[in-house]
Image (cartoon, rainbow, N blue to C red; front, side, top):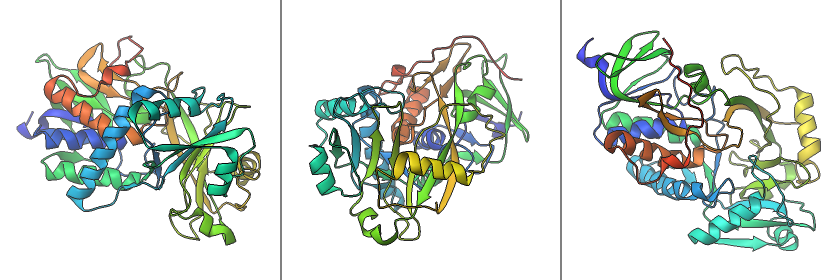
Length: 397
């Protein structure tokens, strides 16, 4: 094997988590290779669609909040280093029933957990009654028994630009990137290193980080049997004559959890002007999909049903027909938490997935922590808060 094919570390999958990990490994002086089966940023996985919500107080669990706080610091550092704009702090709302029974990301009392995290970490916020919310943000037709948490530093990230910037930064710091190469095998050599086989070559490394998102189960099917890949649909609806209400200057990002059903909606301001519309989505977990064979067509009936069931009465200034739509993939655990850790049967491999549909906001800090684990053996932020719950050996050859 040629010297050029051997590295200190190798990252498989260069989406949100992988691009961040590659960047921080390269910045730490690690001789690292990044591999992706596509050419990121791309629309095939979980890290596309122009916007991703970022918030500091995390309703999925307080242990996530330190990662969100650190990620905001890292996004700002990247913006300065690369003279670009990644983070847009337009503010963020979490709306829920006053009974605090609302679910989101499979977590009960999403609103209450968010408020508790904000109080613990000193995150600037307001609590708004339904009357205060309607007055301050007339875009939202909340019920009398609903209230909201407003976070000043929440907002949205541009996912494609975040990935592009981190990959550019990684190369600037010496990383090698190979795109359009699909991994077909991962195996341990007699020398204790790891070989990664792709359709164009074989590479070895002392350690690898697998951030393959929806494809991680195909790489290690017995290790991650309970992970599910689900198809999600994103919709952009017209704002019409009410566009001024939905500009980034007047409309925050938002999550609206429901108490009468175990789901909700989330959305963004109109970031692309009057013709771009406002992006909205719910979360669907009814069926699993194969990431290599996903139906990307969104029927008009599905969009109309989503609008009538979720949007029409809650955001009456919006209308049909839908301007456009797209799909993305969530890789989810049974409890919608993250899975991060070294594989029991392959300790040189650090796996990062699933992130259950709420990973992007944390990805900069998770990537930094992963790089610290590879370079130093431990990280400042505790990745062991998200252990791998499955321990059956698996490898692919």
